[in-house]
Image (cartoon, rainbow, N blue to C red; front, top):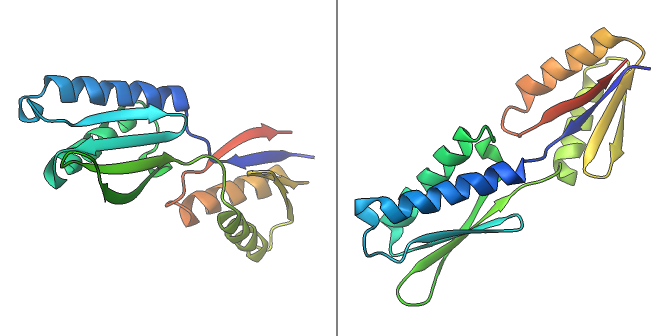
Length: 161
């Protein structure tokens, strides 16, 4: 029975390379000269430390552009609220999302069922498996999901006959 998996996983080594590039650029740019701005990547969290809101915004734009250059969707980045740091700095954590959250999985399943295609959807941890007797139904489902959930970073993998 043909099937495919719906996953949402960022390529963490590529994200790490992007963050290293951002830090190198911060160290060499003239407008960051003498500032305490820095970026760290630990596990799946990026922490931004900046002198003021303007520098933080510049670092945020740098992160998005470098991550995009590494062919990682910027929708994987979840910017949390800004906090006051030590020594007149501000901090912000950025989560690198991995897996499909439960509420998003339920929305996807609901939309697939409303399609009235003859497909079955199974939740497998933080991914979904979609199967059907007809390959065309699966392809229609993929194109529908790409259009409907363009705001989510979804990947369609393991397409099997």
